[in-house]
Length: 117
Image (cartoon, rainbow, N blue to C red; front, side, top):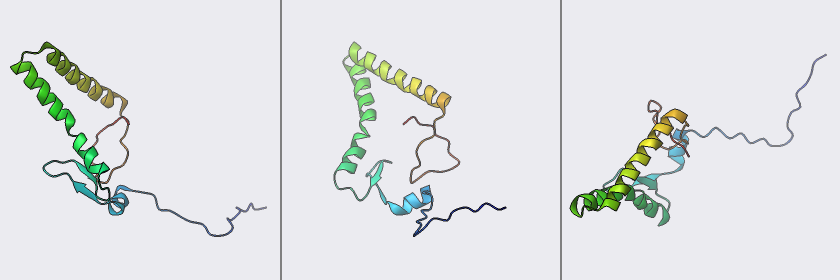
């Protein structure tokens, strides 16, 4: 007595698993000039705008440091301390939780960088 496995009828589509290598060939990425920020090259206005907006946190920290030193602004100092402490707490939580990042086009297997989507 042998059991048979039913075979699918009609056409069967087999899709290879998506890897970072196939993602790199499927989508071309373009660097934002003078930075390491990259964005998909097929987008006209949205991707470059979002790439530019991803650079705002360093400018915000520079503005808060400048306002704290030059104007001796206590509110700017509180915002700066809150921003730095929030970043430190987030980094600690990322290392404790160890949630993996979604695959990207430029992933290197030796690097271990945790993220929390």
